[in-house]
Each structure stands twice: as structure tokens, then as C-alpha cells.
Length: 338
Ligand code: SF4
Ligand code: SF4
Image 1 (cartoon, rainbow, N blue to C red):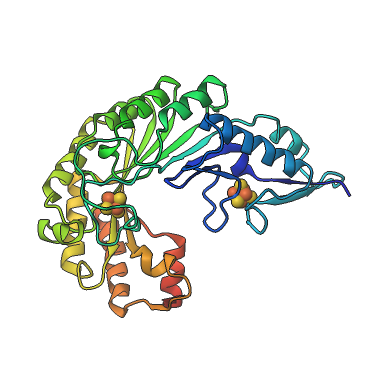
Image 2 (cartoon, rainbow, N blue to C red; image 1 turned 135 degrees about the horizontal axis):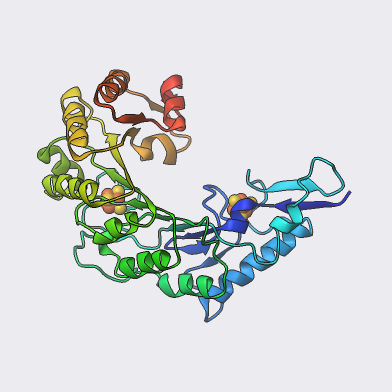
């Protein structure tokens, strides 16, 4: 038997977090990675490339790299089998190109959502752009371009966060992607500060804005995000809608018990979303309750079902596309999460 392993995420991805630089976003398995505090070599780009090359080599020799064994994305192929894709070895060429980048190496924010999963990192509300507390990304991305390791035709970039408005190198990063002809960028933004880079990107690429409004009124917004910026967010989203060429806006609402879990607030949120021109409305539940605390039982409150029905009805009347994550739908169907 002539077996190898392959992982498409390892071949094509880069995932930058505060703690490490890695290739995939597999939730329970980090795979090969370098520690952001101790990259091992002076040149972080080289250290990252060495990890990647070694891991691909190991997979070719049918060895699962550190942190990969058990991961659902680790695929085993028998080279003698007719079912194995003919190009599997080509896919694992020495330097497969990167087509998916997730930027998540900074955690500063200009608000402080009560449900934020980054609360370990968020110490205070910050309003002035600054460097990431962990490492600079721009020189690393530049090296990947210089070494011709980016699949410029198919590259998709996701800016997560923190708040984009607080990242000093945000402008330079968007700029380098635009200069190299990027076609797809997702911006997760709280919408508090208007960012002309988003409009500029939409003139060239398909752009998604994902903004969690979570409220339909100034008072509830302030209760959830601590800052009094509801009107600024609405105005900025309207401005993006008006000025951007190729833009899709996701308006999100995370249900929080005792705070925004009522028809009145949800209804005002949908009106506001229609008003600023949302394409898609997403109704979510508190991530900490239905995802992170695995093993902790969470009963879906009975009134959430009415809210989900109301949400779907209203969206169809308003011509906004409703969106519910598959895992949330499963939790709703089951009635609990654990
Ligand atoms: S096999 Fe899993 S853990 Fe390893 S690089 Fe691929 S996605 Fe990441
Ligand atoms: S906008 Fe995002 S990063 Fe900022 S506090 Fe809210 S959830 Fe956290």
C-alpha cells in the first residue's frame, strides 16, 4: 500500500491569531503552527514557510504532522487506488499557493460587546489606531507576495478582529491586496468608524461587510456595546451602501436573554437594516452559550422560537434574505445544546 496524507487547508491557507501563525482554522486541532511569542527564527516568514514545507513533506510520507492527527480535514489517500484523484501529488507541489487568508492577529476594539468572546484580550476600549499587541502582519504578507506564493486569481481574505478601525496597518494591508488584484474580501466590522478602504476595495473586489448590530435602538445598543454609537453605525452602513460598487451587507443580531430578546427590539432592528440597505439579516444566539462551553447544557428559551418565526416572516416581507447558521438551526431543532 502506497499511502499519503493531504490537507487542502494546509496547502492553501494562512490564519493569523494573537497566539500563533498557522495554516488552518480547524477549531480543535491547530496543526503545524509557530508561536507568535517565540517564532523560532528571526524571520517569521521563513519560520512559517519551513513549518509548511516540512508538514507537506511529512504528509507525502504518510506521517501526520503535529496537531493534525484526528482532524477531519486530514485526508488519507492510497496512491495505488483508482479512486484517488490523479492530481493529488500535484496539489501537494513544493509550494502550493495561498488562496485563503484570515487576519485575526489584533484584538483592540472601540467598543466592548458584553458577549465578546475576546474578553481575555480586550482590556479597555481604545479609539486610536495602533499596532497589534502581538506582531506586524504587513511584512509577512509582503514576503508571501515577493516569493510568488499567493494565488492572486483566487485569493480570498477575511479581516476579523478586534475592530478594523483600531489596526494601524489596516490601510497598508488592504492596499497590498488591492495592488495585487484581489477579488474577494470580507470585513467584520462593528461599523463605529467609517473606513474609506472598504469602499475602495469594493470598486475592485467583491466585498462583504458583516456587522453585528444586535439592537434596533440607541439604548439597547449602548447596553450591549457600552458605547453610545448606534446612530453612527447606521449612518456609516448607509454610506457604505451608497458609495460602494460591489458590496453585500450582512446585518447580524445575536439574541441575548433579558436584553434584546423581544419582538419590539427585533422589529426595530429589521426596520433599521432595511433602511440602511442590508442584503442579508442573520439571527444568531450567544456563541458562548451554544458553542464555546461544550459540555454545558443550554436549553433554548421557549420564546426564542417565536422570535425566529417572526424574523423569517418579516425578512420575506422586507426582501432581506434571512440567514441562520446550520449549527444554530440544529440547536433549535433539538431544543438544547450540550
Ligand atoms: S489536518 Fe487539520 S489541523 Fe492539520 S493543517 Fe489541516 S486543517 Fe489544520
Ligand atoms: S466588536 Fe467584535 S471585537 Fe469588538 S467588542 Fe464587539 S465582539 Fe468584541
